[in-house]
Image (cartoon, rainbow, N blue to C red; front, side, top):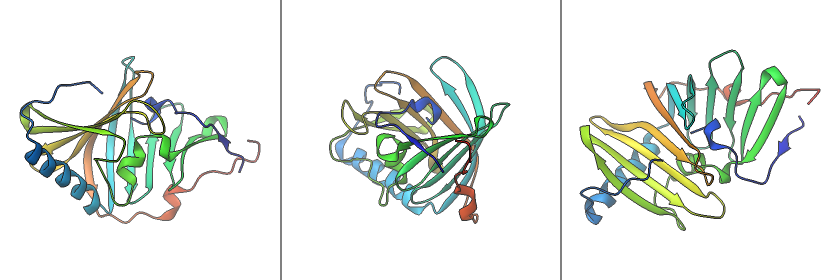
Length: 204
């Protein structure tokens, strides 16, 4: 398989922040919520979900997500132009079946690396982490870095009851913002290795 690699930040709208001031932030309570969110990821073995993605330009896409922690995540987009995003411990592969092309980016240069790591740390070295409590029992955890590897802004939104991830919002260094909202989440179902296979296009 021939893979094109690019040593620069990808256009995160292919995968998935509104800059908000923290409301009612308490360092102790904030630390507890962040730890609770980290534990939520740690307790996820597999996840299936539908998703709706909204980009800065207002465009909307839908599809399905399969996650098998750590490291493995697959987005399958619905629509005429087929698109799959597939992660490994090292790469984010962008598979475009209609064009018989795979383009790959280092996973470390995307915000997905933060939630696929083992263990998950939402207060990683070199990043700023901000907690925001929103109406309706929504908690936002924003992880931000201005420059260097992994630069950008990732916001994770969790519901209160049950406490679980419901949306993430990504803003890249160019200010392009994308949100991904999860629906119909199911946990613990078996996921075969074949789900994460990357096509080998002979003419690529």
